[in-house]
Length: 414
Image (cartoon, rainbow, N blue to C red; front, side, top):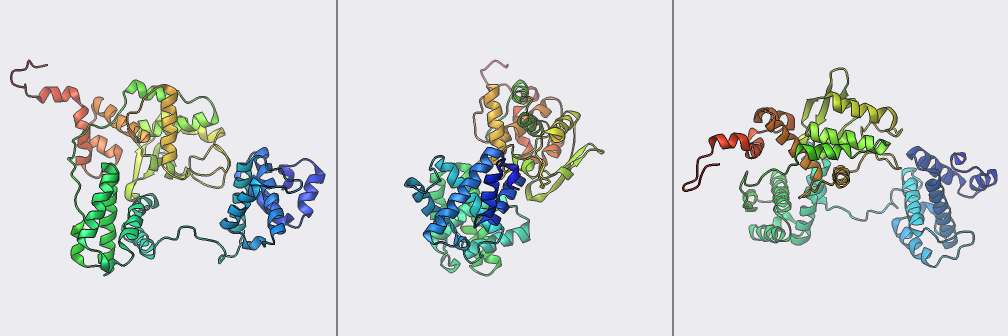
């Protein structure tokens, strides 16, 4: 496998015959399968060599490597005088060393008892996440958002639910609401309510504690949906160039702006979710609810253009893949928002709020409404469980609103 990245037979023989030749060859094979470019892979292999040399000099068995030793290796690089090993590209050396450590863990070279847990979750939080998956089918991104507030709560009040009281819970919510915006505070109160329901169901706290979490003041439909004009959306889509990355991003933008998908929907799409014969696309939305949406010709052509030549070869069946090695799925919905934000910047479109991907979803709903679609049709496309969620888009239908608007006293009608 060394032949994939090295042309010199002497160098290949040197790597293969070294004391850690099999480990380096396995690491090289993993880099090759992940799609790393030759120059990048050679730097990572060189970093692994340097780490092996340093551990041997320090008397550290490879099987005992942990993240703490990588931190020591980082300090060593500041004053490195190892023969045949330069200390340039310090960041590349660290990245390569960490990748090699991850490979050793995956190859079971490092014993499970040696692998460190830098941030061990509290037992209550782990049990809560497992309960939410089993009882409510909650997805991991939602549990991650919930866990942020629950960790803070457990640090504040301790890990004994018997000591929780209404005063402490309300004070915690009050302080959190003063430190963040309404949306983050709402997520916090939702997480705490679900956590208390879990504790009550498991008999770990009194039943009446569930009403201790205050409701944050917020008026439904009080704001306008954030959306872009149709010409701005078209400029954003047209900003994607005729490159592999551009064709991938164009397909993503079309799914967001034409079908109203969420960023999380894009991340979860699989190759098998595309029904080419039936011209449909299967989407797993919030709460893992399955839905089938129509696959338009425009979106279908964009997907074909990406899949035929531009999607990297990889073992995963995830539809959209990173454009740089390691070739794997996007880790979260934030990557999709980054793609949209960059496209907006190229098109010269200003997004007045966070959540660029969701702005395209709002824009799709607004465009459908202006073209005569009913709120029920929009709710079906957006996969809203209740028509009340869709009612906010009625506020942007100015033409229809003018027909029912009453004249204001002492003011000439429009």
